[in-house]
Length: 152
Image 1 (cartoon, one colour):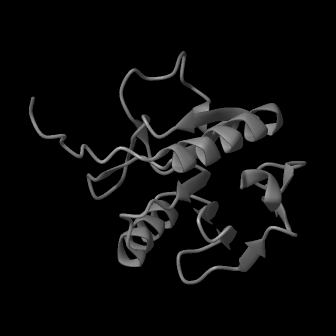
Image 2 (cartoon, rainbow, N blue to C red):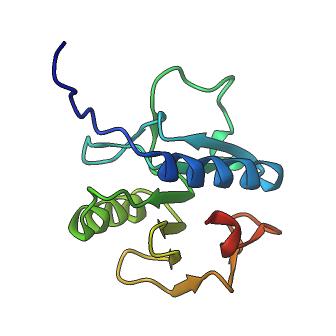
């Protein structure tokens, strides 16, 4: 029997938080909600796959159907759920690229510390949300509101 190989898979807590967000967001979106298996092609040629993403309906105009390949540009909402192996530098690089490629909102979820950082640009977070706070979709996903405590 061989040794296990770490393929970069996320743990159960990470997957659970992503699943909760996917289920909570879906009824509110005018567009599509996607999981981490979907990659977006950035202007730099990089491919990025947020843990959860929302791509607005108006950005899908002119497409007869969703491509079997990658979508161009970053999603309107990019959500990253921190795993133990993630670094802050890695997350900052992703945020910069998301906003340079069209993201309007990003959430950085820290499951083990039970908080969410809300970004409207890659410079610095606009808000730190704790379990007593409400995570909102703002103008990107109007009407969406979820108590942060429901994620943990």
